[in-house]
Image (tube, rainbow, N blue to C red; front, side):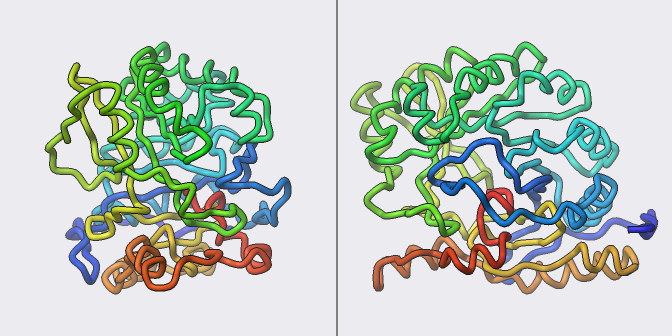
Length: 356
């Protein structure tokens, strides 16, 4: 792109709301669709149709679009992928985003493999928080799930977070029956050791290549039952939040979270949307189509025109994808979410391309 419209300093916009009164507050920004793992629930095939590199947004374009989103109410930004640390010089992007005073929180979700070598630069650039995906503590199990033998690097990355100066580390665990349902307590205990809060995520029916089935879902109820048998009475943490995780407290005060979008969807409070690495904007994790903001940006549309597009699209938003998928299961059972042939025609439909 030869040039971008300059950002004006016109008066701030009110927080925009969708049809159901949900505000636009959180933006997940994918910086790459590529990953260095091949997790069975996310990227089970070795090769995919990758986004052409020339279509990827530059850091300047990401910052420009993010600024327009913050003028509509966004104050939380999460950098995602694929694996975001595969993109060169992510700390530079963090530093650029920190120049926007409307952004109150910048976080990153990473698989941790490359984290140790970049964590200090991320902290120095102004990143607020780190989330690391960790589904098992067992090397052979990790290798079977990811098709890579890099769990030691993940542990190194996790241990580097506190040393760099970060607080508020979170560990995201996709909980699956027959895979890691015997590791709930060990993961909680590991979280204590590294000063991290564990968040268990119900296995979600998204993407298409992952062979999801309801029999593999370890539900919020299952998780709480298992943990209470070991720890005793578990109490919910009472707080006002639109975060996807419901938090709970163990008898000794240790907290953990559960993201239960499969069995107890939270669509009614969802304030998140996703910007892919090539500028497609998706209003829901389950959405099958998005808005091509890169096209508008590179065709020379003005700041005001693009901002108006963002506002009008969000105001028309009706998405309640997780609830609709749950209703589909109740009515007729779930088939494959998206056919693999269609995935190969449109790589945006896989979760690694839209920031999961």
